[in-house]
Length: 227
Image: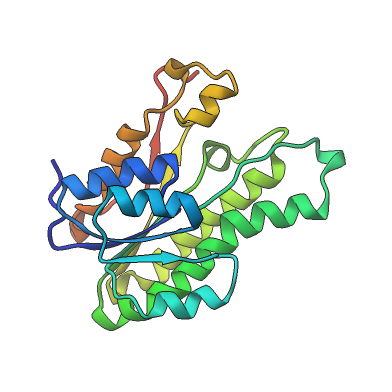
């Protein structure tokens, strides 16, 4: 099991299915947690997991940056995001804003919030969740989702190249298929064709424990029945 006893991790999207699995893995590994989320989901996460800080923030709002700057962490795990499909010819500006606001703008604000302290302490990890469509560079019927998740990975990898000499690393996790969540099961997806969120959480913990001389910047995780 990973040992993260010396880490303070900010986990966004607290209360979501993937974030909950990650929070359990972080707790088991001994990490200190700062939970960032909204409403009832955040409250459930705060009841279940010990946290040094619990922040109810809308990360699409620029005001969230100042709130995050007040919290010192050495790791950011950003799980906030959204999925939607639409025919390319029927996509609207509202569709565009929804995908880029929830998948990219939230990440940008989270990074702007934690980065000043990371640079001061010359130590930090920024880990974001992209998507299989972005890794493949194609998402038919989900072009806006794919583009916004490609922006996530390009942004984090660019941060890594810019900031690694200053002690801040970036890492992108690509779930190469649907994640096994209650919502996806309700939509009729079979559990054996989806990725176990606990497995993804263990991958995240593994990434956080890599030494600088053996760090990982990108990793793809596949379901059992991937083609």
